[in-house]
Length: 255
Image (tube, rainbow, N blue to C red; front, top):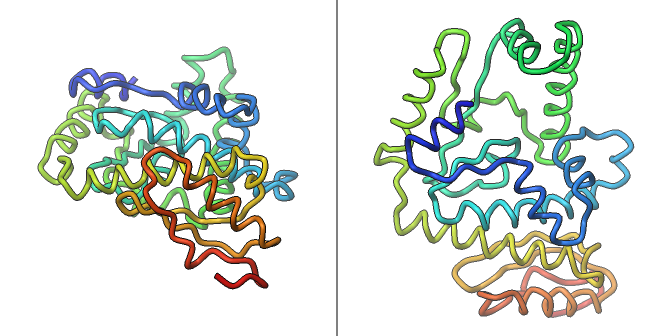
């Protein structure tokens, strides 16, 4: 696997989606529900959009905890969306012709070629719907990635070399600024997960952003008592020095 070879050459840890989901389950959500939130497209889940975002808060918190050292290769979907804003994160997408993908899947599983083709088309449709539904972006958009590798024209050895060389360039070395961005993302993800886990605030529709030890929470909440609960839960998260409530209010609540 390309990710394993890249991690070995860089002397980084390697983390899979399955590991992150397992750790996210520590918030009290079954792993199968977390997997569904990460993989399944909208459908019946449309009615449970908030629940899906709540589960993703747990996944993001688990992922941020694992990658905050900066020496990790994560292979799994959504990493480029859940780790936005950190300049030393390298986002890589692998592409290949359908016949190549069918052959690889057929050789590595017990699926027939027809079953492999059907599976690939299903997964691609799910990814497209998933990213548009939750993030309003096209998962095929090359601007979401730092490097796109076509395995039709490149051998795996060449692909590994490209990723390693890119990761080792000065552009993707951690800086004071990018480390602060990573620390802010970790803290905001912890707050988001805490709010999603607490029964008083689990239904709150809020956005969380951290800047140093100050956490900014934005949302229009009802009833007014929910505002105080959000402030309390966020303020208890280790690392939070202050919760800014200027953009957090119920429609009939003045702060």
